[in-house]
Length: 201
Image (cartoon, rainbow, N blue to C red):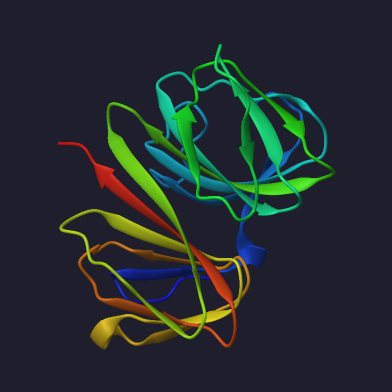
């Protein structure tokens, strides 16, 4: 369900839409997409989680930039085009690369779950930051854009005068105002992924 406030939406993990991969090799939980209801061929931005159970190629998305983060599992090695393999682990910062270059993955140990952020290159830019903290963590404001917070562990997010939001594991908060002051607080070591989406003029 979503919060009623016009600038804040709360998305609960149990409500995410599940759909097959573009190449049929697995299933994705779609967290949010714009425009609402957009498919794989016409989204401007898309945030999702996927469980990867075997080695293999990634789906190709023409004109799309993507960033991957490992949420669960030991990690995987990515080979992108002619470049050498890149190792992604849960403790690493998110990794950005073009989604229209041939990419394949080898799992380090067993099944992993990843966070996938994709934007259409001519319409939107993005950046993803992994925040690991104990106690409180204040986020920097941005001049413009949309902020999405994916909470890997339960936290409370204070959004200025807009109130406090109790977030469960893998719940997401979307703010249409990147300039809104936000403070996150957890009961112990906490991890939150911050996604900034900046539409192009």
